Amino acid sequence: MPALIPPRLSFEWLHACCGCEVSLLDAGTAAFDLLARVEVVHFPLLMDHKYGRAEAGAALSLPEAEIGVVSGGVATRRQLEILEAMRASCQILVALGTCATHGGIPAMRNQWTTRETLQTVYAFGTEEAALIPAEIGEPLDRVYSVDEKVRVDVLVPGCPPAAEAIVELLGALVEKRALPTAGKSVCETCPCWRGGKGWPTVLRFLKNVPGDPDTPLEETRCLLEQGLLCLGPVTAGGCGGKGAPLCLRARVPCRGCYGPVRPGGNPLLDMLGALASNGIDHRSLIDRKSLLRFSGAHGLLRPPRKRA
Image (cartoon, rainbow, N blue to C red):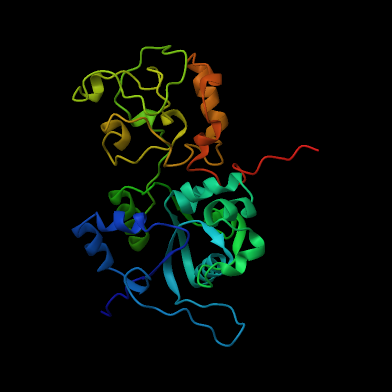
């Protein structure tokens, strides 16, 4: 009986910090067992692989693979070219991490124009864009999520996604099993108890959770009801794997790193509704755009319109 040919796996990172790849390594032996069952054909963080061009001016090419995984958003034309090459070379394309699925922290710059961003970060405007190193490439008008530029088959949010979730997903793709499904919010996986209406205003994020930090979560009142800006009602769950959400374990309100709980959701609008339903005055919220700190792609964060 002929030996089964392992599926080919291709990894690429764009506008990202490599936290998603580190999370995969955090899975320990489960990650190495998974990688042993595939043929890794492209993984810039682990192996030296040149991007091929048949001739000058031709489109970039990457090795063909059954499964492609992309982390990071799209912020430059170079990154867009790499992403398009990944889409063309991979049968299944996975957007891994919130930067890839919703823009992540880098997309916070979408609230300013490219010129304003360059002036703020590099102290020069687009007219001096030639000073940007060639390997970085020309910036796009904003930071895009992967699915805004190419067709994506699987979205895996998280900053970073839980290690066990990455292994479970890739294992399902390798074995051609049904993919794990989500759909629950952070609130639905949080063991804190709720008492109804709470504190009438939003407290500063630096305000500590009252009480003994060693008190079990089951005996801790909902942080939102205590006036702490917890984005649990509008954020997809899963950061804690099968346990309690990670931020809540540290007695810190959810910051929304897993993106909207529902596809196409707007955490800003949805959270304002959640505040109102909890009897909290939304006018006490200092920075509304901070509600989109992980979800600034898909046109949710944009420069303010200039008044005539």
